[in-house]
Amino acid sequence: MFVLSFKTKRKNIFLGILLVVVLALVATAANFVRTARSEATMAGNKYSLKAESNEDRISFLRQFGWEVNPEPAEIREITIPEKFNDVYEKYNEIQKQQGLDLTRYAGKTCKQWIYEIQNYSDRGAPVRATMLVYEGKVIGGDISSTPVDGFMCGFNGAGASGEITPSSEDPGGNAQSGSAEENSGINVSEIPTAAWPTD
Image (cartoon, rainbow, N blue to C red):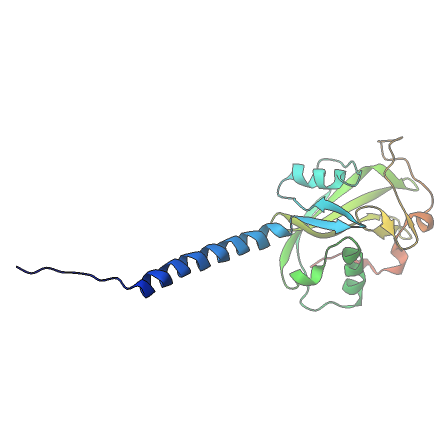
């Protein structure tokens, strides 16, 4: 009669358990990193970056008081450049002020969603919210007016030389709280057209 017998060494058991623990920790860390950027902080306030659906994107803008036309004015894919020129560096300064940083996404292709804001206008001209979305999260964007001498600022309307705020008095989009110079973080005439990320 022939009998097979296996002896398991304690060292092998310990290594097997250690391997399982390490794999569990790696999976937990990967999940944490993936979900950690679901929020950002701007001026001491946290805000959600979730933007997987149209409803998410509209809710994202509502966090800052903006009411938008539910249909995007424009949607396109753009590639964040590998190396930033002066224009992109200036645009990225707006992102850093709102707790974001486009350099993390250099070389990546994302989607650009542009919505027309209904509760603010610049001298009667449209104001737009631009969101850059990567893997269902906002990675950058701005609020800007369409006139040549208009403004561009972060999502909360705060900027270097003033602040714009959504109007609750006129949800039709005809309200404004002063000139572009009083309201804007950056005067659009100071930034070349190419400041808006495009391919």
